[in-house]
Image (cartoon, rainbow over all chains, first blue to last red; front, side, top):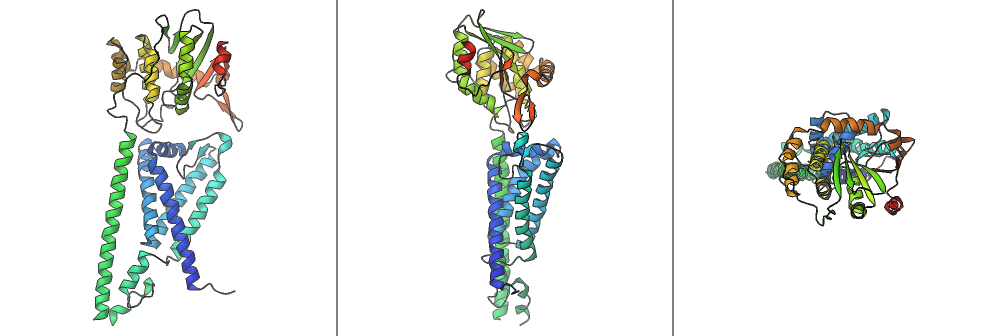
Amino acid sequence: MVRPSQPVLDAVGTLARLGLAAVWLVSGALKLADPGQTLIAVQAYDVLPDALENVVALALPLVELVLGLFLLAGLLTRWVAGAALVLLVVLIAGIAQSWARGLSIDCGCFGGGGQVAAGQTEYPQEILRDSGFALLAVWLLARPRTWLSIDGWLARGRGNSTEPEADYSGIAEGN
Amino acid sequence: MVAQARGASGDRRKWIIGIGAVVVVAALVIGGVIWTISDKNKTEGKVLGPAEGASSLATDVTQKRDGVVVTVGKTGAKASIDVYADFLCPICGEFEKQYKTGIEQAINDGKLQVRYHMVPLLNTRSSPPGYSLDSANAALAAADAGKFLQFHDALFANQPEEGKRGYDKGQLIELGKNVGITDPQFAQTVNAGTYDQRINAAFQQIENDPKLAQDFGGGQSGFGTPTVTANGTIVSWQDPDWLKKVTG
């Protein structure tokens, strides 16, 4: 077995970061574009009190967009990946509880959502898809170094070299 | 020296990025909240009037409230249908858009009597909830004033979206005035929710009526809106010729 080289790992991480950014930007924008449908989708999970449903329907699209923007820019990648992972786990749990309770809903993950006919649920696909997104987040959480990121640019600024490695930050200071 | 300069410029970069990120996030969140709230409340302050191109009913068409059902038509009309709809339900809005003209033509021609049932199926689906019931109650009050269909058509023509603000009682009362209701009793009935309990009771019966249950697929069946029946059986209104088949 050959250990993958750093550039290969960086490339994979970059794709994961940009892919996850696209997911959040698209899902957040679709939700934000139709606040009424987003509220219906949140209500369909049937887990929150009315007042909180409104808050979640208002906040969720914005949180998704902020996560997407940070990932796109590559800013605080590790922290944002952690937050994305937490959110995905919550969303997967929401879908799973609907499935377990026998509700017939569309997850509304990418806009839409709400109740659907009993034969039209897609719980396994939805959970599988979100789990795939969670894997991208796990990668970035474990190895946040990517190309074209503000994190890397900041690390170069602090270090006395062009090496985009955040951990080198302290070395130049002592010279 | 060089290293120090680099370190300082790195700190400055951090500041710039940090401030930039805070500004972008704040702008997005504030803009997003303002947009969401204004989009959800766009029915606020809207003055409702008669539906555009509203068909005028012949003078001998009667609009009579009987309990929580409104019967519209000429006496002696041979065919009759029952329409179960919710003023918030989008497909009911589609149904109205598609068949309103044909139905009102058949009513005017004395061929058809329509029994309108207002069903608060989506009462929790407006934000704030309650539009389905308020509008149903107001439509019955409009029937008492002989202006049911005008009121009904105007509400469907200006249908609010699910998950968003409907119209409040003040706007419903104003619409009543704009379609020609002068009786002060109308506003009182709208404000008091006079028919609310009876509408809900009728809705429970309708929901549990096996004759009104449709097959939703996947082994599930139940009541949905809109539902149209003729002679006690459900009419599949997706068939564009359903009305002709009913009126003969």
